[in-house]
Length: 401
Image 1 (cartoon, rainbow, N blue to C red):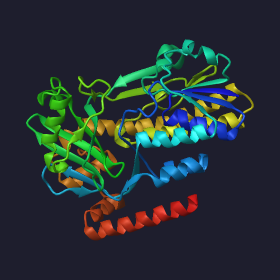
Image 2: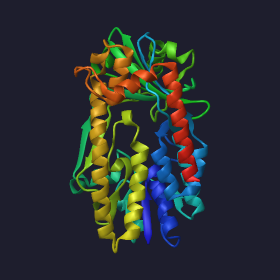
Image 3: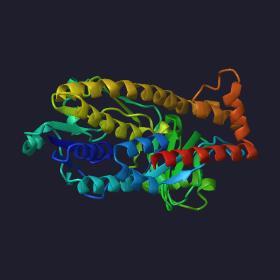
Image 4: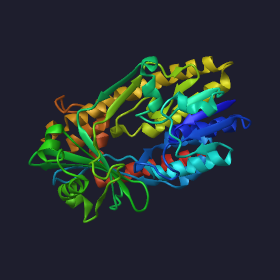
C-alpha cells in the first residue's frame, strides 16, 4: 500500500508510524511544509488515557514520550489578589517540538520517508504520488487541501468571540495555573503549565472590549509583551514572556476557530487531526484527538475488506467521538467568554464553576463533588488527593509495563 500524509504534526506522524508497523512493506511518506526542526507552539498537554493509547499503538515511542514530560500535581485558580483556590488533579505536558522530534525519529526508524520544505496546496502538488492508495490530509486547522475541497467535505468555520495569544515564559510554574486579573478595561486571564525544566506555556485570553480597551488592537508584539508582563507581574516574578510568530511585526492575537466537517473523506483523501476538527484550547484535547484519529484510521484500514469501507467506518466512529468532545469544548469556551461576569463570587465558588464549566447564576452547588472541592481547599484534603493521584499513576504505570 502506498500512503502519503500531508503534515508532520501528531496526527500525520503517528498514523505513519502505525501504518508502517502494521504493514512494514507499505510505502509511507510524510510531507511537511516547514523546515526540519521548525514548529510553532509551546507545550501540549496530555493525560493517562493519552499515554495508554500511545502505549497500545506503539510502545517504543510511548516510552520516550512518557519519560520526557513535565507534570503537575495540582491546579490553582487565582482571582485578583485573593488567596488562590485549588482544583487538585494531575497532568502532563511535553514541548510540541520535542513531541514531534520523538515521533519523526520513530517514523524514520521504521522506514517512513519524511520530506521537509514540501508545500502541498492541492492534490495537483502530489503528482509524484499520483498512484498513492491513500492521502491523509493532516495539515492543521488551516489545511490547504481541505480548503480546496470544502464543498465535498462540508467544511464549516466559526470564529470564537474572545481574543487569545499563545505565549511562553521562563518562569516554570510547579502546577497548572489559571490567574484572572482585573484591569481598567475589564478582566484578563492566563492558563499556564510547565512543559520542560525551563519553560511554561502561557496562554492569555480576554473579552473583545478588554482587548480593545487595553490597546492590543494597536500594539506591536514587543509592546504587547510588555503590557502583559506588567499586568501579570506578580505571577511572573520578573521572568519575561516569550513570543513565537511567523511575522515578528504582527502581534499573534487570535480568535479560536471552530472547524467541523460533514464528511471526513472523499475518494482516497481523508482528514485527520485539526484538519478534520478543532476543540477549544481550554479543554486541552487537541493532541489527544489527533492521536485517536490516527489510531482509529489505522485500526479500520487493518480490519476492513477495502479502502472505502475502512474510510466510511473511520468517519462514522470519529465523527461520533469528536462531536461529544466538541460539545463540551463549546460549553467550556462559552464559560470563558462570560468569565468576567462571575468574578464577584468567592475564589472557591468561582474555581468550582471553572472546573465544571457551569453558570454561576445557577443555585449553590451541593453533593459529593462540591464537598470534595471544598475538602481540596484544605491542606489535609489536598494531601489525600495527591496520595490518591499518586496511587492511580503508579497503577497506570504498572499496567503499561
